[in-house]
Length: 500
Image 1 (tube, rainbow, N blue to C red):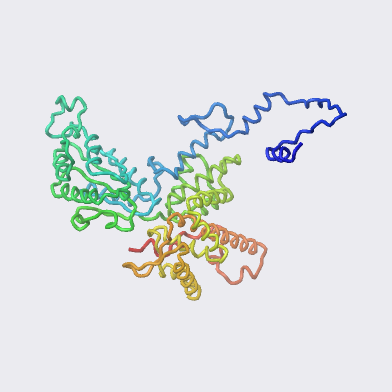
Image 2 (image 1 turned 180 degrees about the vertical axis):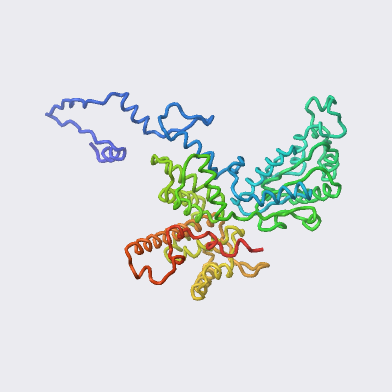
């Protein structure tokens, strides 16, 4: 047999065939007894991954998994990739929701919500609209796109409002009884803010709430200008239509142009990060719906890493719950959350460019990655920005703060993950790539939490053993216990929550 054929055979995992030599006769070896085909098929089928439920969210009849129902409930309880639509899962922010409702109902103003991605704006919008629908408002939800136009959006809105509520049509009118809408009254040409306001001015017997979500995605300055003009028209004429606008922005002016003309007609809310108690409430809501239980250490870990982000909390709870189910448990432990954190890190790293991944790995080798991670925690809720005041808040030691500031300056000057800039708040720093922020923060939070946990366990063991060095004159309040190891996330956020 030639060396080429031999190499080809090896490359495909086959043994090379022996070539018969002259004078020798080869008889075929007896065939090995094979297992029945049905057993092999059954084994391979059992090992092959399957969907755990049908497209109708029913249990698959082919599976004999006693935790299959728990998986379905867990998917409904924690939905990191989707906003909250079931108010049973709405955690905390009752004061925020109350304020929004009163602004709409009592002050009759228009509402603008803005903040970082993953902070829960869309979930807040959905719960707000449910409350409005219960009060018999007509609610029209529109998710804006890059190419959205004023004409397109408000033709769609008008198509959702029955003619029954137009004061020019009696309830028994043919057009109203045949299901006509306000869109039937619109002209063929482009819509203007004045024309839309004139149409909505004819509404009677109800109130209309127009929700414009993802408002920041729209790239057209004309669209934003028309929205501002419509708000002014609706307010000046006390028309029974109000707008709720939500989008990603660092401040109000960034989200809506021509703010001065409508400032007195709007209520603006920068959606805050959630408190530790609210994150705990979110997980507890999920426990009730899913039937899973999170032990104290697991809950502490989720609260710490979430850092006030409902998205992080839901993501980690979802992965940790699945890890527990995969191990045949309905109780989520610290180890399950550790697996969830590792999985989240893998997901977030996959969203980072190769260039930034390489820079992060170099930062780890030089020992500065943890500092960048803590700064990322501060910048998560401030459009990726932090400054020297955050360093001072997070590292009170003057020596450490000076060292870290010098390191940050050096990284920014070399354009390694950071960019320096001057703005109205002074000299600040931005992470050059937005996807880096959650990855760096979770790495830092993971390291800090586990170190704190290890130190707490060591102190408890030392105290139990009567180690005098470990229990030297400290009050019980100062001894770090495993429960106290879950430091409140505010230690990792610097001034970001209270910044203008």
